[in-house]
View 1 (tube, rainbow, N blue to C red):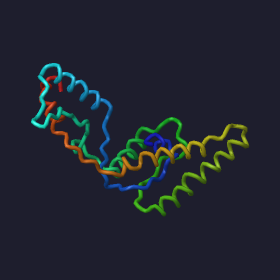
View 2: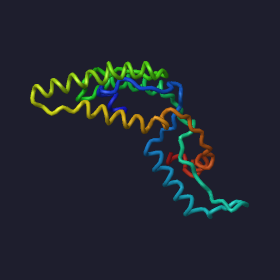
View 3: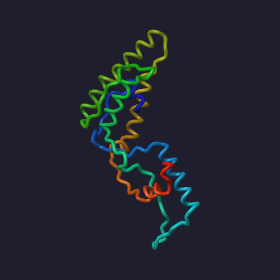
Length: 171
């Protein structure tokens, strides 16, 4: 979705710009797996009174919290400084809470231009692809909507305690 915004094909989205989603970089997950494996190998497993095993929630929680609106603004700034090679339109767009306004914008700034460019591509004997791409973007957005527009609050104190296993020189 970020690449679609950067190329200029996704120009509107509905959701809460103040929501802080729990996005996790891949390197954070890999680091967590390595630290957990290190802890399992070097320290004995602990089981509490109820017989529960230690669980490490690999969640970013509120460590580097950034709202969806701030993420969009940061993305706009970065894409203007470092534009992508195959931009179709100048990247511009926003997130709105109003579903009606979103669907009006969706039609006029995404669907209608995609139809027009597909028609131009047909006349020049190139295969049309933008409407198919818009359908994929829409399906992807609908699939991810719950995760993007919900603030997740995971308790990850055990994960934070894993950071103490790492030497200061290795951090």
